[in-house]
Length: 282
Image 1 (cartoon, rainbow, N blue to C red):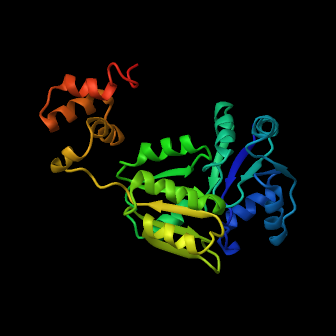
Image 2 (cartoon, rainbow, N blue to C red):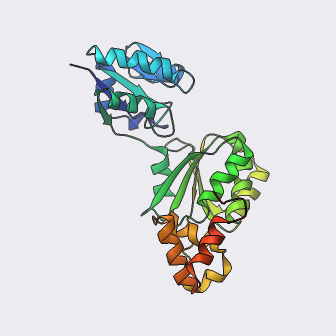
Image 3 (cartoon, rainbow, N blue to C red):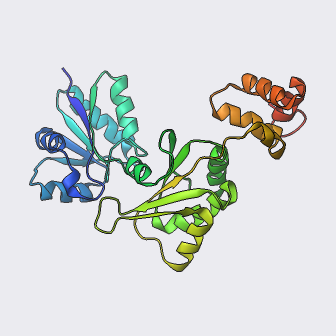
């Protein structure tokens, strides 16, 4: 019988947020796989937990994944932790979960802090529907492609960002979303110096022109306003189609609905969307 992989959520700041189940699991497993063993050893030392550690991160996930899987298949339990918060969200833990699932190994989660959710609920932005977008690429073209792909999304958007890239990201967001889009910037969540800044993108850029960003950030961005019938003239046919696709329609259905909205032939929408004779035609 194989062992169990425990996905252990650890504090994102305040050590008091760790659960008794998490402490029990970390104390009883045969191995703890950690994104950064230096940070995890500090946590274990604080709670006087002694357990073998191994690193598991983006650059060694293939070979370490195989090693961890072999231990699990031999009947040993393993705990997976990230630097902070819940593993497998915007980190290589998702690959280990997939590997275990493909090999019939039991995976269970021990819930706890998630920076994205904590930032969302204090953002004062709509929380009924949201989309987690994680970290943006360091490649400028890929970053713009990502932002442009969600600029018309009506869900609240959540991003992670490092302090040294925050100014660039805010400027890129303004380019894609517009300066009046409302955002919340959360840093030092659950810590003594927790800070939540609620403002527009234009205002955020001004704030960080005067003070340097510090700490890891969660950026919560309000969704795009839903386009009403009177607004069709303000967006292109392609943007019109893409909004319906983002809402869950397939391309064929989105083209049909766009043609109906605009009272124009469906073939005209099809030709414009697929750019027949142009760059988008496949």
